[in-house]
Length: 257
Image (cartoon, rainbow, N blue to C red; front, side):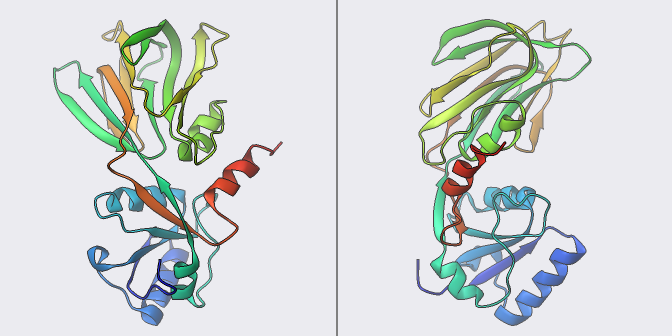
């Protein structure tokens, strides 16, 4: 990247603090339309970062986040000073999304992209029954659970970690397959797959045990079959201050206790 980035677009999460900071930064550095910027500065939390990254998937414009949320795992610390130079010195991390294809009980088919994870959830009080195939080969005949997910390395420290899934190094060519509150088989805790794997979920007793499928924040209900694969044509770039990159944050997370 150039030493300094002058063409910046600012987006805010909408909280009073983030809005105030965004207005101040726009006055100080200007504010270009989203499509004309060399870099996007996202002021908010990890949720805003994911929304912004989804918006930049087609353009490839890098996103530099500054934290105004609660966790800020994907964000840098806020500072209004010398922002063009900070962005120019930032280190990029490339992330590739998962592509989810779903077939619903009404015969419709849909696709959506996920930077964190694709998740299946029970829609009622009853546990779901799911068959799991990898590359077309049945690997688990029946998983009875509250749900199941496939996570990217970037998403492995999010919901996947809360569901006791493995933390994946950010540069690894891996995916995490993790059950959510599994009932049967009790001892199955998931799998680590190569990023070229194609994972298919087939729901059982779908009318009695309806299932929804979610790609980040896009949900489809009453699904019968869900296929998940990595999409290498739609990468996004996050920018981090030197020494605070996502690879270091993921590594540090593995040693928390």
